[in-house]
Length: 139
Image (cartoon, rainbow, N blue to C red; front, side, top):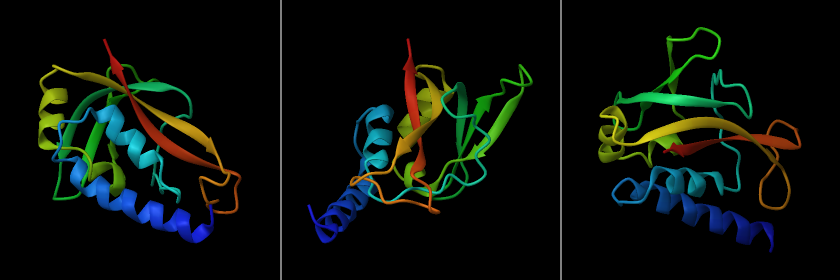
């Protein structure tokens, strides 16, 4: 697959992401679709330690395309830590998802994963790996 084909595929994925918030898809599937992007997503000031799960306590929409996610601190038990979700992930989160999480109907854990760069991911900042966010359902 040529670079031009991969960029075209990535552009289609970005268009699909904008409409995911209007579907009844599970939040896990939505995040997986965002993680299939060709280009790495800048996670901003992400204080999550890689490969460690954090309990998602609540989500709060602060504007049209911004969502703050509150997770429990591993260092200071009982303390809520806010994290501004990157736009690509926030675009997929619906008001229904926020309501289900905030009411406690659905519970998730957030994890910062490491993804090796290969033909499916373009390198970011001259490193051979990038970071992704995943959510894991808690039963």
